[in-house]
Image (cartoon, rainbow, N blue to C red; front, side, top):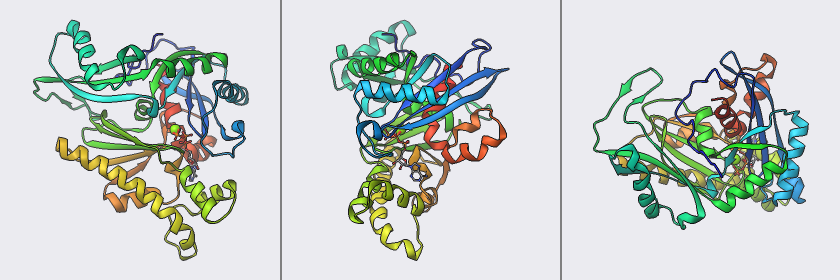
Length: 370
Ligand SMILES: Nc1ncnc2c1ncn2[C@@H]1O[C@H](COP(=O)(O)OP(=O)(O)OP(=O)(O)O)[C@@H](O)[C@H]1O
Ligand SMILES: [Mg+2]
C-alpha cells in the first residue's frame, strides 16, 4: 500500500494543476467524524461542503461520547456523513490518529541522499518499538534553511540533519483503508492528524510554538520550531472526561452534563462554584501534563514557547484559552482553520464557532489540493 505521509508536506503554495478537482479531508475522531470538501479555484482554496457526525449513537451511546466503532459501523457513519453533506469528491486524504502512530524527530549524521534510506532503516530500528515488518514507515528530512512567514531565511551551521520519522502499524492502516473504501471513496493519502492541524492553524514563525489538540478522548501536544514538529506527546484524557465526571458527581445524564460543561466552561462566577469543583481538577490535570511536556522539551533543547495554538472541540470550552494564558503566561490562540479557505460571508459566525473541531479535516483537504 502506498502511504506517502510526507508527499507534499513542505509546500504551502497551491499548484495550478488539479484545477477542476475537489478533495475531501476525512477525520475519524473518537466522538465524531468530520469531513471537509474543498476545490481549487484560481489558486484559492474554496470550501464546498463540510460536516460532522457524532459516532456515539452508532454504538448505542450518547452524542459526544468517544467510542471505538467496528469497521462496518465506521463505514456507516462515513456514508451517512457523505450523504448529508452532499460531498461529491471521490478522493480522500484520511487522518491517522496520533494514538495509533509513532512520530519522532531525530538527528542523524549528514549523508548523501542515496544513503538516507539505508541510514533510516537502521535508525528506525532504534526508535520504533515494534518490528519494522509490521509497520509502514516514512520520513521527511527537515531542510537546513528555513524560511519564515516574513521570508527570512536562516541556515544554522550543523553537522547533522534532522529527520522526522513516522510509522503506523500495517493492520491499522488496512483497517482505515477498508473503512474509507467501503464508503465508496479512494484514499489519496494518509496523514497523521497533527501534521494536518499544523497546516491549517499554525503560523510559520521562527519561534518555538506549542500546538494542543483537545479531543474528546485524547489530548495531543506538539512542540514546533520554525513551524516544524520537534516533539510530541499525547495523553488518554480528553474533554469527555469532564462530561463523564459531571454526569457521575451530579447524577445527571451524559447529555445534560455535556450541556452544562459547554455553558459553564472554566468559570470563576459564584453560581458556577459547585460545577467548577468537578471541572477544575480535570482541566488542571491536563494543563500540568502539558506543562511537564513543555518543560521537558525546553530543558533538553534550551528552547522557549512564545505562542500556544489550541484546536479540537475542547478548544471551544468557554474560558479555557484565558485560563491557559494565566497559567502559562504566553499568548494562546484558538485555531480557526477556515481562515485558510474562501467561503460565503454568511458562513463566518458558524465557522468561527466550530473552527477548532475541524482543524484536522481542513488541513487534510488542503493537502489534497497541492
Ligand atoms: N463548545 C464547546 N464547549 C466545550 N466543549 C466542547 C464544545 N464543542 C465541543 N466540545 C468538546 O470537544 C470534544 C470533541 O472534540 P473533537 O471533535 O476534537 O474530538 P474527537 O476528534 O472526536 O476526539 P479525539 O481527537 O480525542 O479522537 C467533546 O468532548 C466535546 O464535548
Ligand atoms: Mg480529534
